[in-house]
Length: 57
Image 1 (spheres, helix red, strand yellow):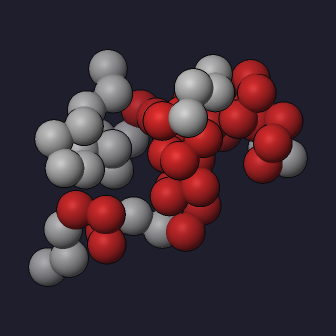
Image 2 (tube, rainbow, N blue to C red):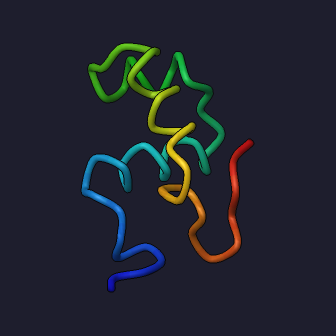
């Protein structure tokens, strides 16, 4: 079983990098050419954002 950062897809990693750099969902969506809804869904996925102790609520 893959865990940590290796468990994330490439797009999840891109989203996480932007959020960690201070982007909110709207600016991350614009940067990645996605909808705000898509970004928010990625942030809600249980387990996807539990990387190295980082948990988004």
